[in-house]
Image 1 (cartoon, rainbow, N blue to C red):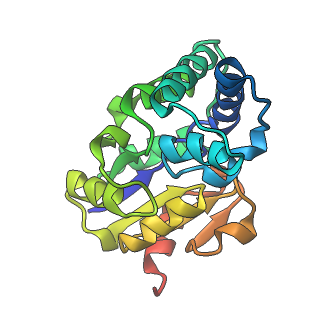
Image 2: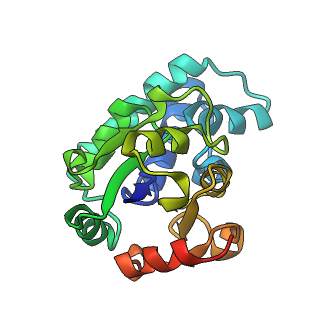
Length: 222
């Protein structure tokens, strides 16, 4: 039995832009500060607290993180409920191919809190009930690059790490997958290929990934 584990943001759901939009709007509303979307890019995949608070700390701005998360979430959900389709190319075909094959189990493993992740999955037209496991940020105590989230996914799928392939888009996510002793395919939705070189394979879109691709990655020497 094999496991295919999807990160969500930047892999299945095109949320990096909306996350940055919501963050900029939050800083303007609460602190009157004009942030830029790319202020948040280095912290993609590192958890919401780090994503929202580090740009402020670098600017010497003190924020109430609980208030910031509440406002950010409100702004983000507004965008998710606007009717925008945020699914990324190739994701639906890959999900359905793995879900239909008897040798594969599939999971979502996202650092995002469950409620927010469900909103983005819905906006991406992805049915989480198709997955054998849904691991989200409310279920972990340590954020990527710690491998905890991928250990949980492996356990939930009852698939050993050496039989699992992770799909990631972030540097910290790749580090987490590799620390969990899993193979990792990186898609260049959020970072350019040169930043993702720790992955076992790099693709520009999930349209380039098939079940045969997954088998080939699993067969690669570590």
